[in-house]
Image (cartoon, rainbow, N blue to C red):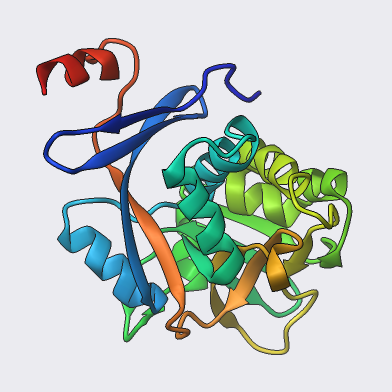
Length: 247
């Protein structure tokens, strides 16, 4: 279930802007600093060199939900930039997919990167699944790809495993804010050999509809991302209002 809370934007005197968004049963902080355009691996490296975390697809879904749905009137310049980036370029989601012939898709949040690509071995992913590692999921082939309704997107097993159940619902609502309310999933219905791919989100040609990309090689140099602060602003921590007062 999506949180009834909404975003908080902190524009610090130091020039750093942070966007606090509800995420699952807590909150996460994005830094309003756009990394890119560059490849998946280079953007991830730049984010981590700055002391931030590369956002997973479920985290990216929470950011987009606030930008497209909660700030529906477009009053926040930071969110307008997020939406403009989605319209003209890609937003990388740092969740990789290993497609396996005759089986389906192993999905891994922030997998190791080797030679510019996520490195995922099926045997290691199976071990993580057996250990109930929440960073790894599996979905069998048979999920719908291509054009679908926003409701179908929210129920699509690949999307749910890619972005989480709440994330899938949020992406469906983001889709409804586009001119064409039928989102599109770029993925594979089957493969002849194991394929490692990365994910991204964008608003299609001319910003017309939400496109979820699950089959990128990651080498395109037109992807962006916003980093996530490691500290969690959940109950028990200082509120953003308190922090603003301390600036």
